[in-house]
Length: 278
Image (tube, rainbow, N blue to C red; front, top):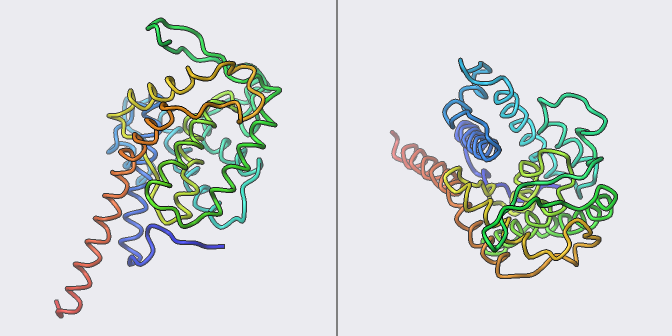
């Protein structure tokens, strides 16, 4: 099953360069949000040349290689009729390439222990946010996969629908927080699947907007009455915070679309050159 692709119509060499640019941007931006120290140029060098950067942690190299492998899996998933737990677990294993085996912190399986993050409340005070209990994750993720697969079958979204789709899937996924680690990277990969099937490049959160991105998610989650006890996605709020996150996603989409526009502009210049006998 093959729908539109954002690179359709490009010559092989132009398509290869565009895909490398998207891979580099997507990998750098997503891993940088989690604290990876490699710059965009260093990320491209590691992925293109297979070499390490002197003075940079081995873990950071492993993260970008794992994320790039995860992108290849995402593209492969586009030909499937639907996604299942198995695809999510394969993707998680790729994302956590540097992971040390631990039965309590599994790669390629739902979390076994409760997980937490530091958050800021509406009163400006810090608190510890607890995500849904591990026992609730399988049912919640079964619901989430229904939403993902419903969007995955659309294939003809406009730009506003694409941003809303990405935002809704993203907020619900990170609120479930189904894995012990890698939830942000997984969300930023998986929630792009419906967009890619509709012919859009991925939405990539710019490193310069990391603070706005994380703050918007936190504000949304502040509106969930009992996040640890969440038993159904129907318990998630439909709020102004979700609309604000959608608006941010519209901004996040720009850089990827600019890369695609530049590639097609180059293609057109090449075509005119051929027709003119240059």
